[in-house]
Length: 358
Image (cartoon, rainbow, N blue to C red; front, side):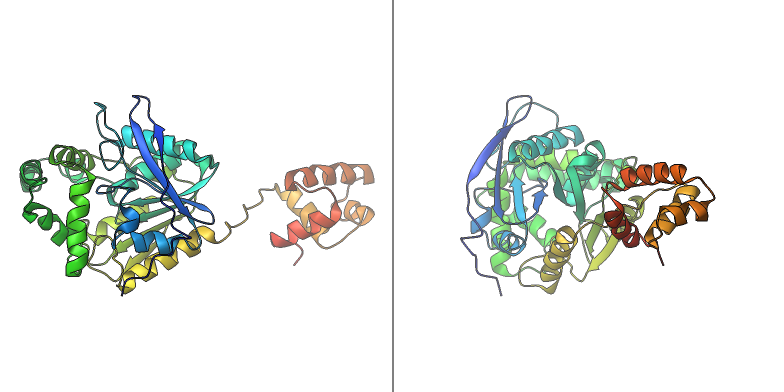
């Protein structure tokens, strides 16, 4: 059963940022809490998201604990277009423009499907601006980048040609072909909404260009350089991006957590258990405080830290370390500076939180 929309959580005020070419990028925000940027993925239209039985519940659910910022990539939805080649650089430029326009100094990123690559690239390029990285149905390499040539590439080109010719037709047969692959377990209502969402997002020529650009994405060399906490989610029965590619993605990012969602849908849809689990997992991951950074100390500093955490005074510390009282005082001052504290009481608390004093 679809969740009711909450208009107090979901205002629909659309704003515009601009990329270097001058093209406008439509963006909007809703909800409250830490900022989560939904990196632009195919088939979006920020003016229609909130009225959509497909995307409205997403924004409603996540917006209870998160401020969700979303935008349309150039040439889609309410964004303008230009002649800039589509690809990783263009996608990162759009994402950067929206984050700057939002005024947020640090955000979490949600990269779904083909949007996982620009999310990774931005996190590597701007590590100080990204608190958390969430990837859903993503991959390291697109179909052409992973396996150029062969039957797979030929099938892709045939599909792209089909999109160019049939995307904008009043008969939704071509769009239904994609809907069946993306969300095979959708209800008739959701399937019809997804068909219409495709039509509202862009025309056939643009859709074909997007498909080709997604197929050429490759962030295999960047994944190992991600430094923020990362959660990778993937549907077990995904027909668009097989689950093994999700495991490959998680394994390439240092410390990434991986969770399989029990669904056949590439993107979890309202009404299925995987949708609820996705929203819960993302909210818990982003809202939870990040673990305190591990304090890096030399062996000698470690001995000093242990003595402070035990509550020893300066004379006891000097005797324990076998140094003069003045030397102990100087070492303590240096330790306090490294801890970012102003005196012994704060130092004791900070060190015990790091495990010293046991």
